Image 1 (spheres, rainbow, N blue to C red):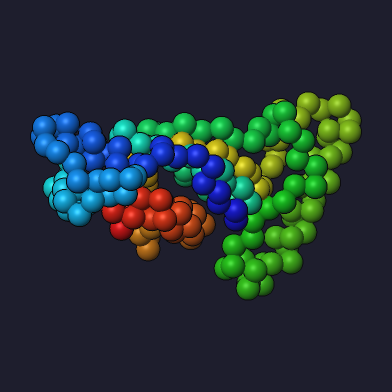
Image 2: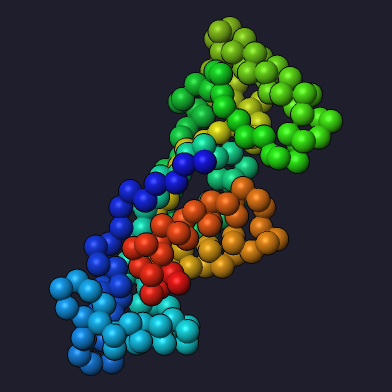
Length: 194
């Protein structure tokens, strides 16, 4: 799994504080692109109280690769976002990479799983070589097939994503993704993503 923060609103916490201070017509104590003490306190208080609309003024874009289609199917359920995913219709998947869960790696099914992935790849290539369109051959590809996706969400949506996907009952792969995203967001906006 590779998670890269490729773009974000510059000075995100300053932007959010500016929005908040506009609501309350009060002065900021932030200087030189650094969050001031009073502004940090205000921001923490507003987030704690659930005044999250101010977080919609900033966004973060991630490029995520080496994850399964099963993960991306869960990810796109977060509706307030923009997505651009590698197309299995236009990109040939011959020799596709895939994810193997640890529970399968350490089970008696590991060999069968690997053999089945190889068989699917061979059959996919056979169909492609026999002029079956990739958009039709892709129907046999497994959810384990690796994918790549670019995701943009505002900070409010990312907080909601993290709340749901860092929980222990979330599926292991998306939980791992959420933790990596959270660390990157904390580096950029530590007051918001504490």
